[in-house]
Image 1 (spheres, rainbow over the protein chains, first blue to last red):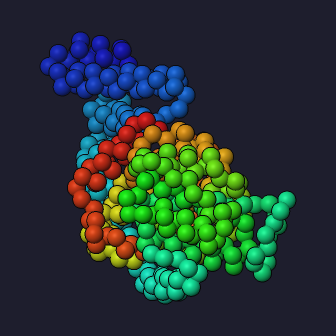
Image 2: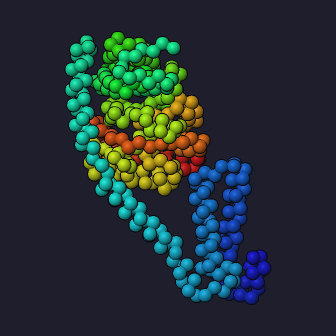
Image 3: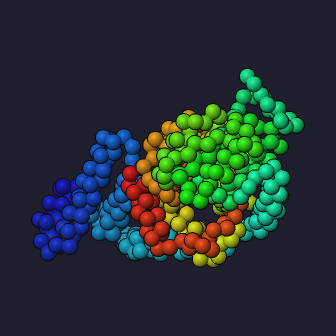
Length: 136
Length: 248
């Protein structure tokens, strides 16, 4: 990876864009390794760390394919599919969330019988307690 | 071991259920909930006791509790009051110290939790460390909520599920059955307040690999009309949720 990094600077001096993305990818991997180290030290991974780790891995993979950081020369089709993926996945997640919450609100049970039963029990309780000598 | 067989069938298998009732200004509801508990446990034959932890209620809840103690007996109704309102976590700790049962029920004293759902059966079936009443699955549900309240409830629960993946469907519910030692170990680890306290209990239970069972319950909200869920509560809920997210 260091070699391709150096070769990029050497042979493509105009390719400032790809240098930037290589730096970002390096950044991802170092922070990923840092997170691993923190995890190893603490032995338990908080949910936040799990998310950060997951996002970094996915982000690195995405940057790898989209910006061709390892000069894998993947077919153009891969790039075209990968490039809008983050936004696309966010939109899909948003729609799924709305649909799920909407469905759950719509099917939220209304416990009419429980309320009626409770009212009857309250009446019974009040009378019985009065008989037993409770003074309110 | 002395046993008072005041019911038709007495299950002499040694399990005793302590019901913790933290109260604050529940003068009207306390007699009703105690009556329901006595009736249900009496019919079911399980051995039980009710521990009333009153936080210095100004409306005379403690006096009513004393009358109930005279009616039902000091072995069934235990009074362990405190000077002032000190919070739910400490109320549980206080209650556990005086509990002689090996299982502990926690529930609200305002009749929102339906006593008939309070069944040891699920715990016995699965030998669970904790059984949580859930409003969100199966027959579980709510009475007395409008669309706005339902939306907030389901929305908040969804966010919690996505962020914390807790393995339980209802995290903010407070109608639960714990093994006594499980409740002890969880309460001493929890640091949050309010809604988030109940959430943290379940999250910590997961961390410690306790088994969690779920039972659908009906939640009858009779106070919602008086106390709407305001912006402040939502903000503090989100803050608590993010804290749990970052620290567990």
